Image (cartoon, rainbow over all chains, first blue to last red; front, side, top):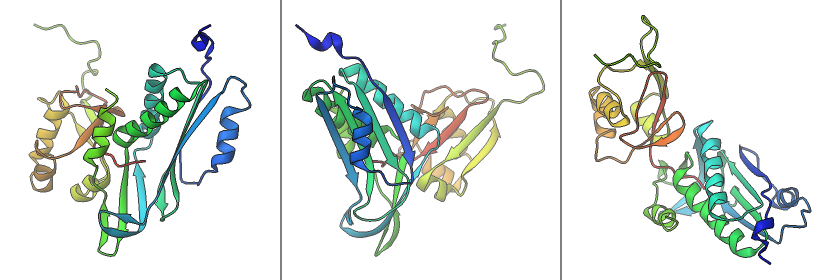
Length: 160
Length: 99
């Protein structure tokens, strides 16, 4: 019997916040002991100390209040249109970051792993190219705005 | 004569736009936000960018057609031909770098 018919969509939660997040408690809350959840896929983006050949001491994340949440919700809606998913969670931090700080969490639940893995990667690829955040780095040579990468556009283009 | 559009502002109230600038563009252009009258011959994002370029200096340099800037209208990502209308919020910014 095809169990695609019994995938009941769960919740979509999108948060933009300066505070750090705890992945364990976010996942526990997300899947909420729903016995239909067979797969949980997670991605965490972390601040590194090296970018474009320079040591990064600190980074600041700017965003477009209002549009940021709206853009992330649209990306989540798009993911639901492509795959049978149960829950979607996106938490993106803003403000000052230092190397080893967590920046973003994407978590997806579904019946099976194929959808969860694919949707998680899709959500990140679209977030990298469509969500209005901008990073400014402080390096030994001074402060600079991070340039968008052609590889991010290419990654998003894969899903067309 | 064309029929008057139903979303035309009442007589006496000029069509306005709220403009926002983010990240490096905000720093280079030297402002975060402004409210302007919708210029008479501007009806798209590209038209608005061309009108802003007439300010010269950094406006002319940064919003040139070959430069990598992006725009949003009413908090939705826009294209050069996206319409711009009275009451719209239009934001200009560099390509995004979140995640």
